Image (cartoon, rainbow, N blue to C red; front, side, top):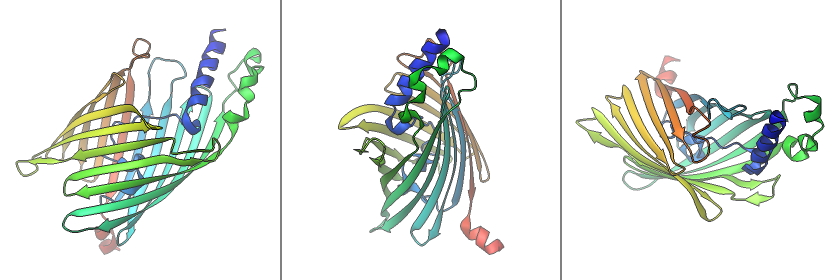
Length: 292
């Protein structure tokens, strides 16, 4: 009976998530902002690889997990492309997403620039029912076509950059074929790098905001302090009463980062927090071309 109730709750959560997507609130957006906005493709001028895993609400049975593998690169002048593979799970429910996108940067006067990005997504939904009992398999909600349909949607983004200031706006789901909805939600992400003592320290405040419909959903405020571009610490607060503490290390072209997150209005007493790890690797295209 307890397992049946758990499944019912998970089905309810899964059905109300937009486009059958389990939202993951990333803690390392300033390291790889193209996770939420295709306009950032090629922004570093390098070939960037991202490998990330987030395990939410540890200790809570059948809690969400999120895996991402991404790569983006400049291809010609001011153009760039990116590809992303994402796997999400929530109890017996799974979603596999393949994403491909393109961006173009317009260079303006001085240090100003504006980049436009677009991406296309294919989502394959599935369920893992091998562990269910005979009674649970008879639940008609298990066979709802809403849970099993594949889905296509597209997203757009804009990025404004001036020197060390970045301001991006994106709409991850411009149009959802399954729900026939447009502009379901929008993201705003902005940050600024303060250089101290000739980049010995880089202090970076950032704010991420989610707008759903025409209303405010939540904001994520972070402060990151980087020492000699070798090690950084970051503290974050999300207006859902969630706190995150992160640390990262950089070795040449590699960045390894870890984040622990706790809190939440409803789940804090039930879980042991959320863990996220990310590995980023960058290749300098100019050096790669010379070596060839």
